[in-house]
Length: 249
Image (cartoon, rainbow, N blue to C red; front, side, top):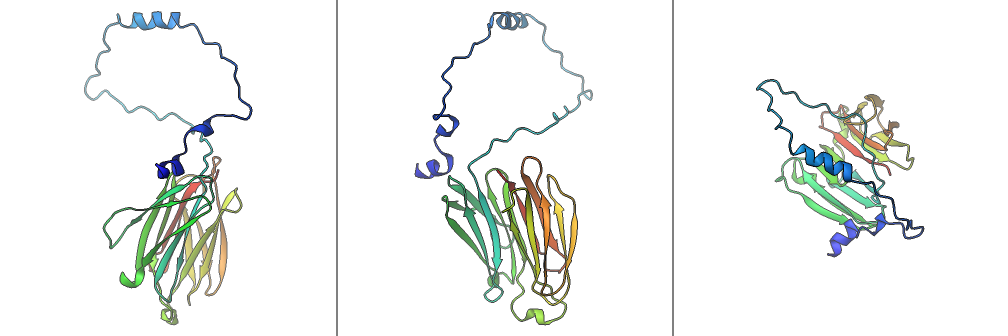
């Protein structure tokens, strides 16, 4: 189908048609291996271990090599404090279509909403927090370990007049392919303590205080294969949390 061709391709990228190697490799002689296999049929059955004597095998150490893929997804969120609309923009800078699926974590039935974003295009998912008492919480999933989670409570315009309300804003950037840059901003009237913690892969917990009307940058490392997974929270009492996970190819 057109959808499958857009997101899966037809496997021709596995071949090098520009500088093909047409040599025929020399295959090993299998006579000895066949003799060993035939001899194995005459061996006695392996005895079953007694109850309580078995143990779990150890995981083989190291990382499996990861082939570069044509995916270049990105998703981030914008909160409109005037209308209460929380808009997640899903971009695709890759060379093939990218399938996103959005799942609500609260209020609504847990069911995925699919979005297929073609190369160079953008799609949007909108959560109307005005209808959910200001709360929002949803997760965006995609292939190759891509995950985003956006959660919190929309502080509507005018609410920050109470001097104890903090309004956290976090945006991420991967323009530097060696690291993930998190922009931490405070649109409220009191200091905010942001915490970034690793959910997996490299990185250690970091805490950053941001004063009202100010912003700060936090740099998050990628592991040696270009992976990242970080969760940012804010101590504002609004259940604010944003997760960024994925690969840099």
